[in-house]
Amino acid sequence: MTDISVSESTSILRENYNGHLAYIADGKPYVIPITYFFDAGDNSIISYTAEGHKINAMRKNNDVSVVVEQIQSMVNWESALVHGTFEELEGSTAKEKLHQFTEGIKAIIRRKENKNIEFINEFSSKSYSRGTPIVYKINIEKVTGKRREI
Image (tube, rainbow, N blue to C red; front, side):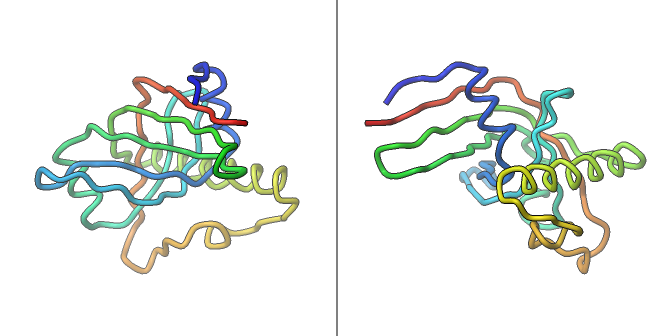
């Protein structure tokens, strides 16, 4: 296993839209899958959620991590690890970032999977049935990465 550069790690973030978010709730670590979009211009990760455990925990402790993997096989993979801080977005900023999230992921899917996606529910299982979505970003403080290939 070898370290990869910040540039290579950032490329992993840019080329994917599924990762795992780590946060602390009641003194215990939690890791959950998320759909995200890497905003290179803002050096942040954009996502959204509904009210619940994750958002309540991040409001109390905004230190989080995100890991994104590209796995070819058990002996051929690479990953990026982000350390950052949670920031809840509101109003027009939240709407703008949610639009950027949607359009960005649709572009990745068109490029990598040759699928033409129309709606957010085609790539994200979250629904708006639990109220208005809470849009948030992870402000990236540090990104590192690893690679293993034989």
